Image (tube, rainbow, N blue to C red; front, side):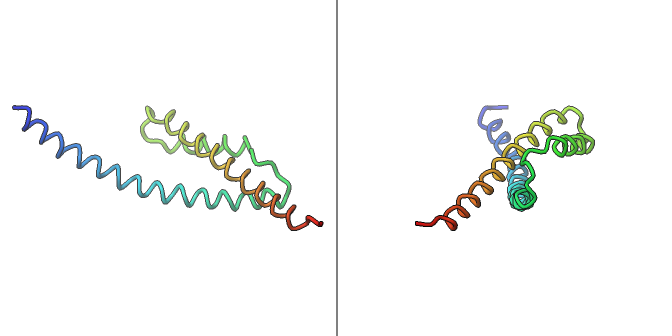
Length: 112
């Protein structure tokens, strides 16, 4: 097989797989955005009841559930790590939301 034909076949084959990844990425972005929006609502509830942002027990339970759903055991570690990053970013979002609301309340209560 000459180089041009090999390169052409490679390009066709890799493009099909990359298109599948692109479709999944589109779905993942929408799902992650929805998750972060819900996480923002969780921040409001935590703030209302004076709860801490970090809930290790909840995160451990989610990781356990996620691990049990992974069909390919070789990917369990990687998927758990991805979820740990999601958790970290959710906590960041929650802190940011609570801090922004506290700053806003302080501005409303500020008197000259």
